[in-house]
Length: 137
Ligand SMILES: [Zn+2]
Image 1 (cartoon, rainbow, N blue to C red):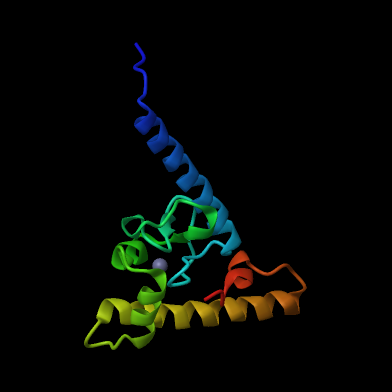
Image 2 (cartoon, rainbow, N blue to C red):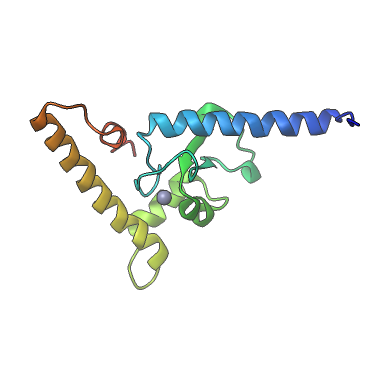
């Protein structure tokens, strides 16, 4: 027996489908890495991050969705993405170790993706997807 959905329920389903679609599109555009820490990210592990959180009236639009790992997404919470990036950039290992760790990972993965790009260019093969998406922010 099927139950009729209320307009509100329908809207919620449509929203979750859009979130899933935009997350997949963002992940591809980002070269299959987390928008914040740049670690490799699969479709299964990726979460949809609202750059401007829904709690702050951020919309579920393609422009407002990025793919992020669960750790970064949870840590960001309802922060505006620029505030979150500022906290990462200014993080000190002792005062904000969780943010500092992301900063350290960006350095690590940034160097890794650059090396992969150079090796791929030298070998004459196409660069890994992450090489193309690095340095977006
Ligand atoms: Zn991350």
